[in-house]
Image (cartoon, rainbow, N blue to C red; front, side):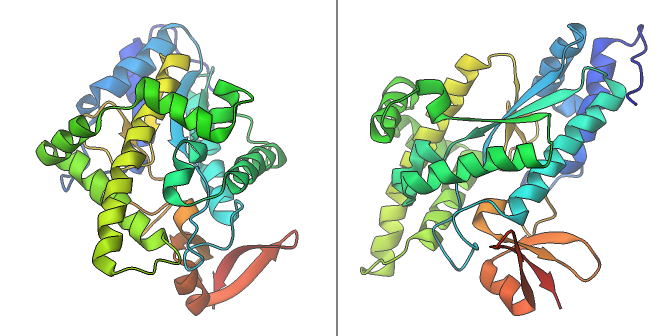
Length: 311
């Protein structure tokens, strides 16, 4: 049963306690030791505003876009055990908030696959199927504190190319602005390099040279960032007071809080770029499918590949 909130607890104090629940899962590339809650003023202010209203804390998380098109990384184009574990983690985090703040918390998963699907080489039909399966998974697991929102929910019955063009036109930063930011800001450059790496790894059937592929992926990386920024601004229009989470590493004090969903080998690994592996000690990690296959046996659920179990 949730614990009752003490009436005289100051909203900032309770917001600090809620933020402490998130801090062990902070996704960042900062080498500094774990900072105190006071180092995250954006998040403290946002959480405190919900606490003052005695309302559920609303988090938005642009994430869970679609599976990587690289079969060396993933088991297929639909969610599997990696997504199930990650969604369960998010719901548990909301339940932990509920223990100290009875209204609890909600995470709106803003599935962004359609926003840049053409740039990453994933068919829109696969992206639709992925998001629809996410919703079914949330229902099947009774993860009542989670919901999924995608481009179809915000723009209605518009073809995907037109929807992407509309969001880009209204909300994307200019290419010159992004290039200047990447040159001047180390976090922006790390994001650009990380996305470029993913694009190189996920490009299938390339017949040109490696250097030509890298040049093409660098150009596409800027497009992905433009579209991601546009998606973030569109979400902010619809949920202006939500506390913003990010699947990408974020520096301490940033407006977005980077969140790590599972025990992973680096700060960039996600369930949609990898495969779940159950280790012999009973813990889970995420690795490339080829690595998981070399270390364990394939497990299927409901007739579909799910994960690997380490031998």
